[in-house]
Length: 496
Image (cartoon, rainbow, N blue to C red; front, side, top):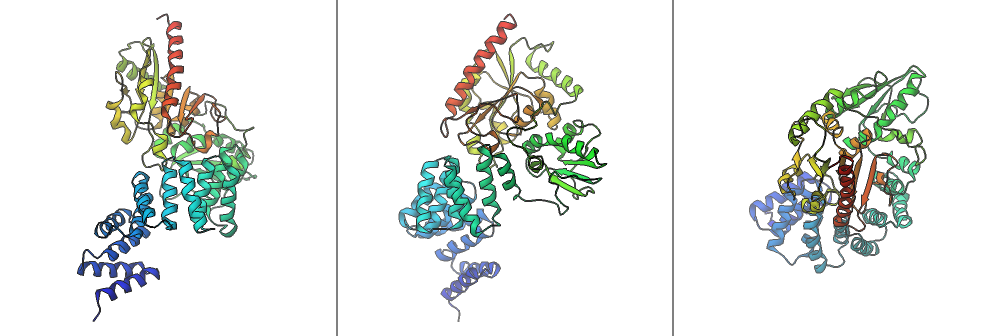
């Protein structure tokens, strides 16, 4: 007769052999007979995490810990699951407990380092990852995480050594190529960075275009990243069209519905713009928009930065001018009440770095206290619900009737300044030549480079950077002081 121990051992053997379905059935049978069996709860949770069901994994391993709190391994696996769920603030104390119980738990050391990295505790993250690397030298995941932290600490040579060590034995690891590429791009070594970026996923089987003569071919340009990336790199579409026109070729640009109206009027007849469908349109060659800088050999000296290259429809501009004036009580639309400043304080909460790039609304107080400024909210998504929590006399919400990015562009055409965190909005404003201020975390996205206050991609953009991780006070305070001076100048010029 099969005992509960035999059933558990059989499930574990299936698990170790990679037979996930058989292992899940085995754990389920054990738990049907004994719902509080801690090993089955723990290991079934591990299996759930390995198969992508993180929420169930967290619940199952958490139950195992409540039953047997002194066991180190479940604490480590729970911390790793919380980290995989992008919950580093919950993972960190759990992993600290795991390491108190077992200081030599390499997986927990690595997960703790990765969690602290996500929380922008870079120096502390490195210490945990150094411990993990000493405990298990050459471990691929540890080396990748350590290299990423070293990169964000600006220890670029050491970071490259980590990535190179991974790639020496695992040349197909796209995440290592991409991590190394980010380090090169943020330092301004664009050409080397573009090469590494080619290791991201590509959607089509047709031949990729790399800048060589295309003959009479039809080339498909397509989005492979987010809205902001598309607006940044669509600047190259007219350059592709010039090459195609010289050899009888055609350019088709496939885009998202929310960008269609904006892009459809940007390039005249030289580029055919289509909304992305289930199947790609007929084409001979393809190029993701983010691969265009590589195709054109872009470095810091030759970025095509003539703006505007995107513009809203004049009818949309007029319609939104009337709407904004109505909100302001400014009947003639003259803006006599002061500067009109657009504000975006948060990005997509599902972005893995959103906790570092978005600003808590309370931190905006110095900015919103500047006199002579009419703030309008261009915030979208979940953070729009925080509008009523903004300090000061209130910020008008103007996005309720926004249908797409063409409408957003029309709003931007009617403001004096945009102040935003790192979202698609900054790319739209930059592509239009609208004066904009970008509030950046200490470790910025690669495209904003290091230390400089301007951007070679967008001449109308000014960058305000955190001097240390998490220091939004300095960033907002500096921006508020500059805005106050600008508002005073505008008032004097208007005779107010």
